[in-house]
Image (cartoon, rainbow, N blue to C red; front, side):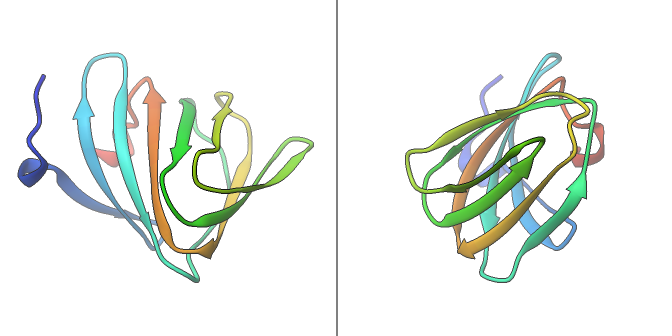
Length: 105
């Protein structure tokens, strides 16, 4: 699958704007567009989630981990693991979900 930037699907989840980029049978790539004040409360989903911070500053919490994330940092959240996200400085994050999140399509 090839997806041109102009064809990305703009969405919103829990007040956060994001774009669905490539999505196949086994994985999905999204670009989260965070702004100051965005906060994703604790939640869990059956998808493993891996991400890469392009810009901004965030606090991620899951399990015993509470970490500040900066540009260049990455993470992986296991499936069904409760986690939350707080935006300190707005920016962009690439997230990959396996399998794709049906609630994002």
